[in-house]
Structures are given as structure tokens and as C-alpha cells.
Amino acid sequence: MPSYKAPIADMQFLLHEVLKAPASALPGYGDLEPSFTAAVLEEAGKLATDVLAPLNAVGDREGCVLENGTVRTPTGFKAAFDAMKEGGWTALDCDPDYGGQGLPYLMQSAVGEIFVSANMAFNMYQGLTHGAYSAIHAHGTAEQKAKYLPKMVTCDWTGTMNLTEPHCGTDLGLMRTKAEPQDDGSYKITGQKIFISAGDHDLAENIIHLVLAKAPGGGEGTKGISLFIVPKVMVNDDGSLGARNAVSVGKIEEKMGIHGNATCVMNYDGATGWLLGDLHKGMRAMFTMMNEARLGVGLQGYAVAEAAYQNAVIYAKDRLQGRDVTGAKNPTGPADPLIVHPDIRRNLMEQKSFVEGARALTFWGASLIDAAHNGDKDADGLIGLLTPVIKGFQTDKGFETAVNAQQIYGGHGYIEEQGMSQFARDARIAQIYEGANGVQALDLVGRKLASDGGKHVMAFFEMVKAECKAHDGDARMTAFVEPLKTASKQMQAAGMFFMQNGMKNPNAALAGSYDFMHLMGHVCLGLMWTRMAKAALVCLDEGRGDKSYLETKVATGRFYMARQLPLCGAHLARIESGADTVMALDAEAF
Image 1 (tube, rainbow, N blue to C red):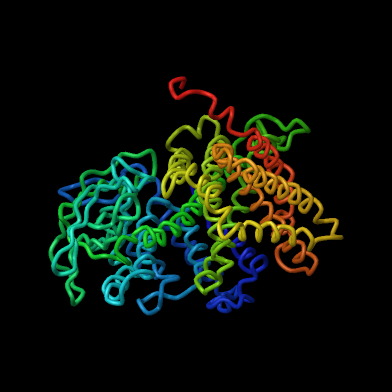
Image 2: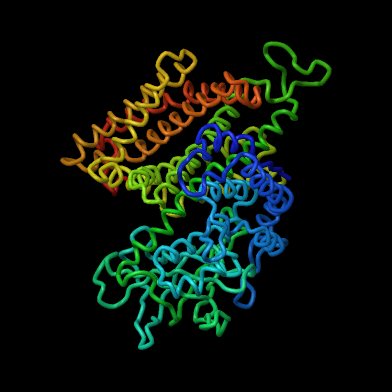
């Protein structure tokens, strides 16, 4: 069975040496002293290692079962969920007015990574609740917030988002679910939603569904969509639970992975719901939840890869196969461990450098969200630009990393009892849900680059330029600065190609959007590695911290800059080849 240990040293390095969180003026950051964050992360790590990780294989093997209209979760999930609730882990960054602890979103992200790495399917139950909480908190009335949020903060009640229908996924304008207004101000919701994660389960006494539906008078397309609160069990005015609502589970989907999370077909048969936010403005309210979910999925991408990587390292050190070409490293044994071989090292270094770079990008993104929540419009614009990159690039590379970790095991990686298959299968969904990665790339190139007149992407380029300039004269940083300069120029060249060609031939831009998302992803990780390397060198110069850890950090960064960042050149070449070869065939020729 695979094991997992929270990477607390790396998280602490990011929080305190790279982001320097306690020095930030953001509310709550001054309390994030090293001793405090270490205590929080260590306790989360214990829950993850001792309780959640052992249930990961159980959830994969047993899956969820629909019995008499109710979903039964795998053995041990209910006790683990109760332990998570009792520890207050569901309330970390929630509003204290509703029972939350009021910590920054940054700490929610760090703890979230730990729980995802240990058991992605399990963590989705409370993760989706957090998204629904955020939507109600942002768009609900005072009465709605008082009625639902305290129980959602504690996860006594959980939450879902209901968008997709059998005939429409990304194109929500095709939605058929209807909302008919009633005399008492409520609505009757009728329709079917599919792919609803945590749509039903036995972990909580109620489930608060957020459902997109079309109310009369809204017109065609997404402009006519509204968002509704539809509880599984009706909530009385005094907060007690009443009668069962007219919402039911049609079936549980049989999936490639995340078997421990119930992915449901939900049937709404005149279910009672209440408008959340403004009528016919449901997309705005839903995107509060969707944007948080996309960042959370980006985190899932590297968090599952972290768990797979940890086990691949253990196997590579233990498994004896072949001899080191430079001389035996285990002369008294029948063979040397796998880790002596250059291609195994190459594989592991790709995994390690991606995971640590993605963690840095995600933590930085979380700090931008905290700034945006406190009125920083520039931070809001920047995280809007970065969101499709964090979601799309990190989940693509996260799946690739999980597969590469499986590869370390050779044939044993293909055998279910080793557990590596589950990491690959679980990681695969992150590329698809919350907006498939092709859609993320289109959003990045089609909308985010031009947002506010290109202000935010230009700010990003200036940020990269300033980072490079800050290290002028430091020879130790040359291996970081020069590749980052080159990659940034390649990203700018790609943007210029879109500007020069996109207006007269939109396909020229859209055909290169996926490559641009990956090109920008590499530039982002290059920026993160440059910051991490400098922070590590400062610590070494000042004699602070674990010398071995810091030297390893710098060496890992050099690998990324030398071996991964040059991929930006290939992405640029593909972008500049335009759309002609992509669109050359008629549909009938495929």
C-alpha cells in the first residue's frame, strides 16, 4: 500500500522564506509565524498520514453504492469525515461570523494539498462544500447566510454545484433545467444534472445543492440562467430539518478514478429552491464557485503527483535492478538500486521539479486571492490571468507526473496492489472537470490576455523582468535568470503572433492556445524557481535552515531551468506555425 508524508519543510520554506507571509500587511498574515504554521501543518499531516491515506485504496476498491435512494460511502469514510469536522479542518478560512476560523486562504490551500495528496476522493466532499459556502457567502442574502452557512462551515451540511446536463457541458446556454416562480418567492426546479460530485452521500445530515436553471423572462443563452439554493432536506425557519425535497439520485457513475467520491445523476422533480444572487445573473454567482474550484483542481493536479512521487522515490531506492555503469554502488548485493541509473534520475527530477514549482505557484496564487479579497484590483486581475494556467498546465503535468511515477515501478506499477495505478487514474479527471483544459486554454488566449486592455499580462511580464534585473551581478543566479529571460521573450513573441494574426484569422490564435497555456505555465514555474533559488541562497549565506535541503532546492531548480524551460521554444514554434496544418482536413477526412 502506498504511503504519504506531508512535505511540511517545503511548505514552511515557501510560507516564510519565499512569500514571507508574516511580514505581509494582509489581514491574518501577521499571525502566520513559523511555529504556528508548523503546528497547523503537522496536525493536518497526522490526520492525512494516519487516517486519510490508509482509506485511499479502500475508497478506490469499494467505491460508493446507491441503496434505497441513498449513497453509501466506502468503509471508514464516515469516521474520517467526523474526525475532520471535529478537528475544525473544514472551517479554516471561513468567516468567523458563521463559525469559521478566519485564517487566510493561503493556509486553506496548504492544508488542502495535504488532504488531497492523502485521499483526493475523500477530500472532495468538504472541498466542494467550501465552494458552495463561498458562493452563498458572496451572493446570498443575510437570511440565506444565517440559515445555511454555519452548518456548511462545520460540514454538518455539505454542498454541491450543479451545472452539467446530459446534452450540455461547457455550453451552458443549451441548458434545459427550468425554474418556475411560486407565490411564496420560491421556485420549482425541474430537470436533470449529471456528473455531480458528492451529489449524495451518508457523511452529512443535509446537502445544499446550488443549481443552475432557467427562469422565465431571461432570454436565450447564458443570459437567462439563474442560480438556486436547493436543499436535499428542507430547512425550517428555526434551522431544524423538515421534509425531504423533490431531489433524488438517478444513478452513480462508474468512473476511471476517484471511486470514493459519489459522482451522481441528480433528478429535480419540482424541487423547491430559492434564488441565489440576482435573477438571470446566475453565471456571475456560479463563477464565484467555479473560479475557486479551478484553483482547487490545479492544486489537485500537483498534490496527487506529490503522493505518487513520494512512493516512486521509495521504490527507486529499494528496488535492485542492474549495475551502475560507473561502478557498482551496492557491491555486496546482487544489483544496484534503481535510483543509480541516469534515466531513473531524469524521471524523478522531472517529477520533483514540477511538484515543487507547482506548489510555489499555487501558494503564490492563494496569496493573490487573499489580496484580491481585500480589495487589491491588480491582484484580482493577475490571479484571473493565472487561473487557467494553474488549472490547465498543472493538471496536465500532474497527470504526466503520476504516470511517470508509475513508470518507475516497471511492470509492478501496472499491478493494482502497488497503488500507483490509482494515482494515475485519480489524477486524470483533473484535466477534465471544472472546465476541460482545452477550454482553459481558450479562456486564457481568447479572454484573459486581452482583459483590461492587456494590463495584467503586461504586469506579469514586468514582474518577470524585475525578477531578472534584481539578480544582476549574482553569478550564482545566472543559471536561473538567463533561461527565464529567454522563456519570457518567447511568451511575448507568442502573444505578438496572436495580436498580429488573430484578428484576421481567429483560428491562428486558437490553434496555438493550448501551446500558449503550457508555454506560460513553464514561464510561471521558471519565475517560481528563480524566487525559490534566491531565497535558498540567502538562507545559505546567512547560515539559516537545513543546509542539505537548501542546496537540494537550488540544484532542483537548476534542473528545471536547464531541462524543462527550453520546452517554451518548441511551444512557440508550434504556435507560429499557425492554423493551416491544424485545419487542413475537412471534417469528413477524419
